[in-house]
Amino acid sequence: MTLPIKVAVAGSRGRMGQTIVAVLQSDEAVDYIGGIGRPGQVDADFIDIETAVETADVIIDFSTAASAATLAERCARRGGPALVIGATGFDRGEEDRIAAAARQIPILRSGNFSIGLNMLTGLVSQLSGILPAETWDIEIVEAHHRRKVDAPSGTALMIGEAAALGRAVPLETVERRGRDGLTGVRPQGEIGFSAVRGGGIVGEHSVIFASEEEVITISHAALGRDMFARGALAATRWIVGKPSGEYTMSDVLNSDQ
Ligand SMILES: NC(=O)C1=CN([C@@H]2O[C@H](COP(=O)(O)OP(=O)(O)OC[C@H]3O[C@@H](n4cnc5c(N)ncnc54)[C@H](OP(=O)(O)O)[C@@H]3O)[C@@H](O)[C@H]2O)C=CC1
Ligand SMILES: O=C(O)C1=N[C@H](C(=O)O)C[C@H](O)C1
Image (tube, rainbow, N blue to C red):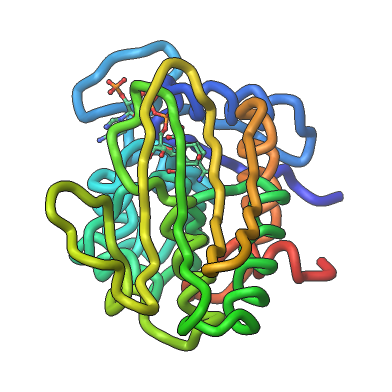
């Protein structure tokens, strides 16, 4: 008989955290051992971070980029547990800290755990590789609820990485985050990002390929948060027993396990 996977959730009282806890609690293959809040924060759901790090097989983190990077270092120092990170808004330093931690433990990070969106990134890479940068401009537009604190969204950046991969260029050399004022003409090869914030929009992303003669738009809309939680659960089940390293949802979706 296989023992259930012991899972803790950082950010368990947030919008995503609560959705994930509900999904975990409905899966017999998982034993939800408790949530992790801000240091000193008290809640009936919380266990202390020491207990979480020592007991869990996997910690799912949907808190903030800063706290996910700190948690990754803490887990790496102990040699486990594995981490599944859904938090977004990482700066370069935090990304480097996660990469360093992933030399000691398995870490799967994705700006979007939905299957549909991960399919979209594949299409974007393909199209970007086919449509010449000399004639086709790429713009990524994302819309989210008024409480979102980071922009561009983690998903928009994933899509940007997919587009840059298709064009075989590093994203940081061609990205343009927002425009204002006397911007000048659009440089060839630029990949633009625009962000909309309002009301309760769960998450909408469009990729626009525009030439002088025609426009292709590929869009994805999240209609709720449950599919993000189910994707995080699939990642959690997949990562158990994996060697240290950095993983993404592509590894889960392309795996036959
Ligand atoms: N990858 C994906 O598929 C998805 C990713 N996300 C990302 O997940 C993250 C959370 O989103 P959402 O649930 O909407 O945001 P919320 O603000 O609702 O939730 C975040 C939670 O984390 C808590 N928190 C803050 N700091 C810490 C800390 N140091 N340790 C532990 N917990 C902490 C917050 O506490 P407090 O309430 O006190 O601030 C809050 O409860 C965002 O980065 C978002 O972009 C969201 C949806 C899907
Ligand atoms: O903050 C959110 O809500 C979301 N964040 C993720 C992101 O930054 O892309 C995923 C989803 O779009 C919802």
